[in-house]
Length: 155
Image (cartoon, rainbow, N blue to C red):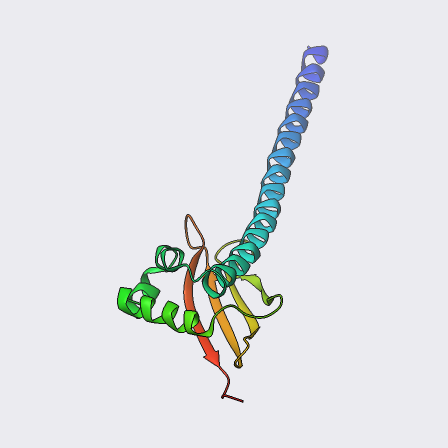
């Protein structure tokens, strides 16, 4: 009888140890996934911000602009305003020299709701200008939330 009780206690403590190890492994895998997902979102957001400025300022890509607007930005930039915006960029031509895009991604909650603000100073032959782009990734893809193009006064 004594032997049976002792084996039962050893089995019980062994089972608890196995459950704890499994629980720690699941928590570790979850933490690893959250941090790696955050890093991937940050990298993807930076790339999207730079690509957005490149595609609009250098390539004057109206299709890219229209396809990547958020629902709120679509109301602010209906197709006629999108065309007008791209036409304004085309009037300035292509910037001289490389485009230095500044900005980064911040998360509204520690791991979720990434948003980014990107800024570039553009050196056109006639006069410099600045472009600011706000992006976010609410569900399935990166989108443009807001954009502004501000040329400086003529020289």
